[in-house]
Amino acid sequence: MDRLENNKCILDALVSSLGDSDRDVITAAIKDAIANDTKLDITKLTKKKVITLPKLDREYKVSGKGRVMRKMSVGSFCKIYNKGTYFLRTVNTAVAVRDGNIIMGVPNNKKGIVESFKIG
Image (cartoon, rainbow, N blue to C red):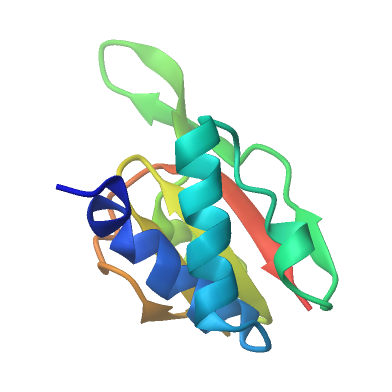
């Protein structure tokens, strides 16, 4: 099976969050990144301003363990960042969020966010 088919959620979330980019251009960029085993640079896929957000780790109190650092979940992200358009890469999928609502991607609110970008 083609790796792009496994990563279709990334393609759909990028197209939804970027808005002004052609699906074929994004598909070619993802295929190129997979073929060269490099990281996808989404700033080159749009004319909009793309800001990489800092690590979204949060400190939680866990009984028996004290305070523990964990990745912020998609659900928590949507509550805190409820204005604007964002592209989130989680543990094994990608999500597009607009104004606190998931517009594309698997709405599994428990997944930890690995990378996040503000679009626009």
